[in-house]
Amino acid sequence: GGTPQILYGVMINKENLDVNRYSLNCFFHRASHSTQKTRLHVRISGCYAVFSHRGDIRSHINAYRRFLAEIKEAGLRITGPMYAYDLMSYLVVTNTEEYATKYCVLVDR
Image (cartoon, helix red, strand yellow):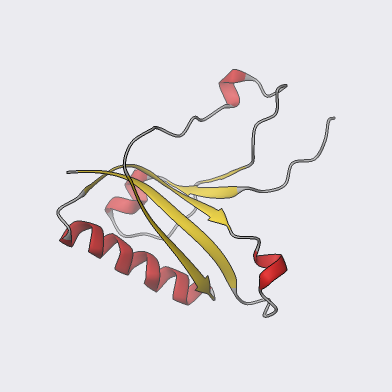
């Protein structure tokens, strides 16, 4: 029952980030007031490295791997999962093979 939820984004766990694997672990949407607390994941506050990318799946994988390499080169350490938010691809992209995504990952020095 209830109102259907629109997909808000996906999460890539730290284990996949550690081995440079572009593998989605969890799909999520905004919580409603009726969401059970055991089903909630609260994003940790802190410093996030962020990038946005538009392209097909292959270009997203390449951009993701470059991003992870840049984080390492900057002397930062990934300390949590990566969140990938859809940037309303269905409105701004006419090519169905392309999509736009904002990637955010918790980092620390």
